[in-house]
Length: 82
Image (cartoon, rainbow, N blue to C red; front, side):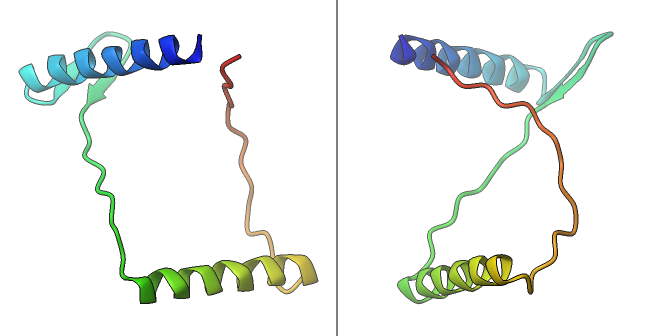
């Protein structure tokens, strides 16, 4: 079931992106403005990945021992496929 839903979501995404590309990346309706955005994904060197891991461990330690202070929190919807 999840595989079928994932396939359908990917097809919908492809169709929406294609439609937006046809309209120069933007669509506007009475209810919404829809646009394309590009997200880049980066792959870093092993040195940077190691530093990133060390930083994550230091952050967890500070959260646990109280040195880190929560600056804010937010609510957001979560959808889990069954």
